[in-house]
Length: 166
Image 1: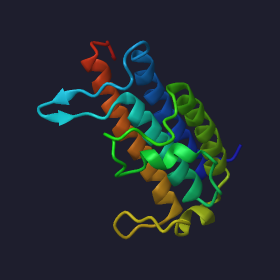
Image 2: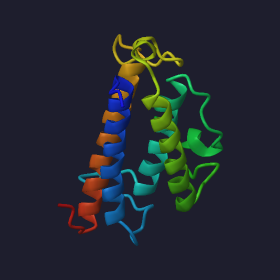
Image 3: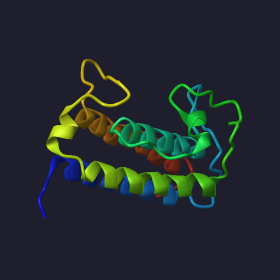
């Protein structure tokens, strides 16, 4: 099997998600809606982080990369800048969020792994930019680092629950 950039990016995203799932597993049985106060700053709840990761992966690895996306109405309630204090209109339960997370991830990995070098070098379909870079390859790399950032939050929250993470 030929190794391509799309396949390497998809594999890296999948390994990042595996680590996210590891930290999620540490919080089984805990209040997934709990926010912690850390020096006057309220953390995101694990629930909000997971729903936000759904929005981000669907937007970055599907829509930005030329896929039509998936029909999950509540995703917009967890986009960047969405008010966390307000109850989301869709208010999916945790099982629905976890199911969507799986569905989005499978679609995103399949789509990304099939992309050619040429497809990855062009500007993304939504015009999202980080600095001057709008390439689909850069968007995929950002999706990986975005997940890693929130995975770090989940790791810290697991520790705040008193869980052994390493």
